[in-house]
Length: 366
Image 1: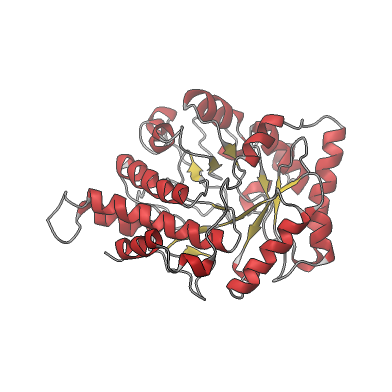
Image 2: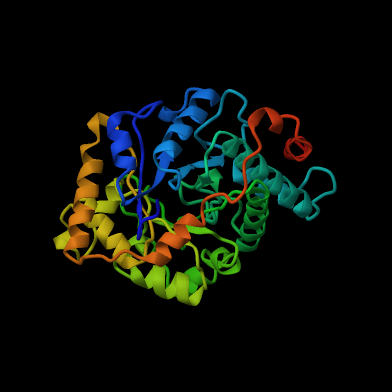
C-alpha cells in the first residue's frame, strides 16, 4: 500500500515486534525503520524480525548503520568484521608490496569487496539499506568521525566511496553518503552539542563537499551533518534549505533521498532563530527538516519505555500536515521507494558457497 509520502524512520525496542510496533508500522507516515544492536541476538532472530516488519509493511525501508570499524551493529553469528574505512585509505597510499603510490587499485578492489560483503550479508537477513559510505574528510579534528573516514584527500574519499558503492550495488543495495557537506572539520560531537564549522562556502565546496559533487549521479541518498556553517546559514545543514535545495540539489545535481540526521540528538532540537532557541518537540523539528528539503526524518531510540515520543511525533506531524505546515511530496515518496532493493537477496546458506562472495572475502583479507 503506497502513501502520498511516508517520511518517518523509526525504530523498535526489542528482538521481536510488539503490538505498539505493529500499530506504528501501519501508520501512513512511516516509511522506514532503523535497527540497532539491541535488535540483534543472532541471524535467525534478525531475519525473523525483518520478516515480521515486512509482513506488516512490505514497502518499509529497513535500514541500519553498518559501516565497518567501530560502527557495525551486527558482529557475531557469521557476520564479517569489516575494517574501518581509514584502513582502506591507508592501503591506497601503501599496499605493503610495491611502495607508496601502488596501492590505489588494491584499495579500490578492497572497498568494492567490503561493500559487496556488507550488503550481501545484510540483505540475506532482509535488511534493505546501510547508511554508508562516510564521505567526511579525515582532518584529524573530529573524534566522532575519526577512523570512519577514508582519507584526508577528497579525491581518495570519492574514489574509495564509489568503489564501496559499486560493491553495495552488486549485492542490490542502495547507499547513503554522509554527513553532507562534511563533518570532518567540526570538533564537537553532534550527539551532545551543535558543532560549528566557521569556514566559507568556497572552502567547503572546494574540499569537504567535493565527493558529493563527484558522486551526485551515483548517490541514492544523503544524510546531512548536524553541524552549523555560520558563513553559509545560521541553521544546521539538515534544517537548511540553502544547503539542501540550493547547494546539494541545484548546484551539485543530487537527485536522491535526503535523510535528516537523528532528531533525538541533543543538537537537533535547538535551532538558531526558531522559537528563540527553545527546545523543539520532535514533530516541530521534523516539520522544519521536511520544509528545508529533507525527504525522510529519523527518530532513533525513542521506542523504548513504551514509545510515547514516537506516537507524539506521528500525531504531531499528522496535525501539522492538516494545518498546512508541510506538504506531502510524491517525488520524495518515489525517491524513498527507489531505496528498496530491486532484486531478491541470496539466502545466507547459499551466500556461504557463492563464488563472488568468497572471492570478496579473499580480497578484503589481502
